[in-house]
Amino acid sequence: MRAATLSVAFLLVVACVGREPTLPGVVAPSTPPITQQGAVDLSPVGPTTFNGQPSGTTILRVRASRADGGPVYAVTIVFQVQAGKGAMQPIVTSTDEQGIASAKWTFGQTPAVNIATATGGFATSPVSFTVSTFPADSSSAP
Image 1 (cartoon, rainbow, N blue to C red):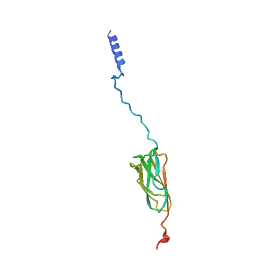
Image 2 (image 1 turned 120 degrees about the horizontal axis):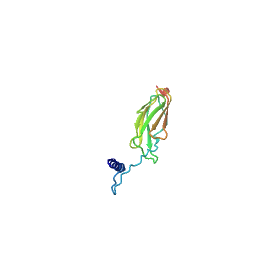
Image 3 (image 1 turned 90 degrees about the vertical axis):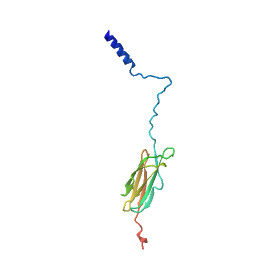
Image 4 (image 1 turned 30 degrees about the vertical axis):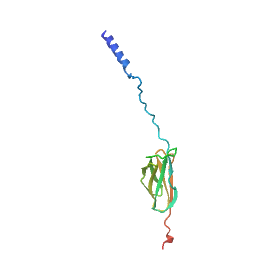
């Protein structure tokens, strides 16, 4: 009889496990679905092709925007020198409230075609910049 009592008690415990009490009119909150950030479009702010002098500098600017054209804040942008042995400062930055990121590009010391790119987060394609550097015209020196 003792074994039968223990069996009945065991079955009652097993039957109750896993059940949550329900209260009338109370609904558990639902978790919103996780959405992936959409594609970001990078576009140049200003010219992408121009001339300069060796060791010269310029400021590169790109704008990150959503599909609807609105700015995207805090997108990580990487500026890289691809050709011309120049330097970029900073290399990694973020967009501001208007979706703009910028970096100072110092060109290489010798005449060359200098190429730099800006890429970012979920950007669909990079922005390329090209500067042809020529030495200062020495024929006009006194």
